[in-house]
Image (tube, rainbow, N blue to C red; front, side, top):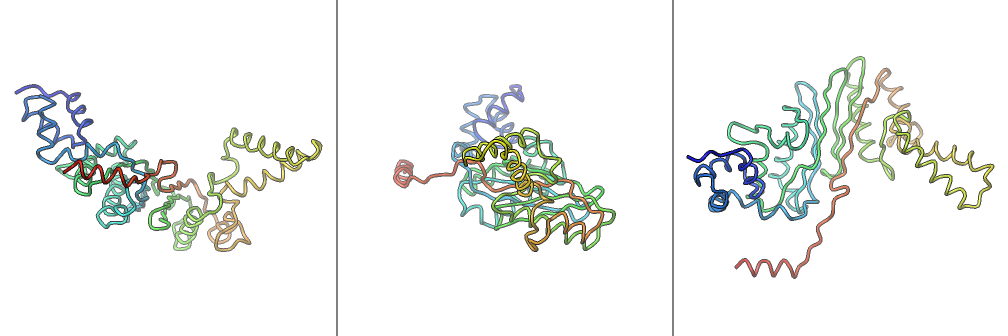
Length: 305
């Protein structure tokens, strides 16, 4: 039997999209011949995903999961090609399974996540490949984050059926029902924030370069409005305060009671509770959306026959 190197296995996997173990078996059956192994996988229906990797996957879902035992939470964005597939029970189950795997194994990045053992026979990458072959669309894990509940509490909120998702962590003296309620409201706040979603918890977290950039823009705006230089500095100071109110979570007006800030709401309802960190994913943010070309799709279907 020909010796099968890891490099050849990875090449075959890259060319076919098939699972690692399937690639190993195919190469073993074909005595290490990668071209024959490709045909072998195609014949077995295990390389069906390969032709779909060039498609745009800019739809999908953001999913969240909190472990009922340890309180660790995860947030993940999994992309597919169409909103129709994203809303199927099977796809939602896949996203939830991936989220649970993140909580369980704490992978360092997407590649590590894909290599995680889903069960005794397949990895997460294998699971996705099987779903691609069955569903008929490209599926890819774009990003994820994981927070432990150590020293506090973690909550998640999924908005608009998976279009926006939030994971938030707080430190608190004791995890009470009130703390849980407050943190859920904070997660809702982050998800529903409009027109500007928060980027930081407090103003001292604002990056120096971000603040400098904003200051320059605001000064330029004031000059373009024809304001004299002697008052521009005071105007910028006032507008920077507004900037902090937009980008800093605790300084935003609380969505359920705009008369108070998020920070004041937390202080009043759950003294001693402090928001440590949060992540907000908007599904498909920054990705190129698929543009359907009906004529091209019809031609493709004809050429398949």
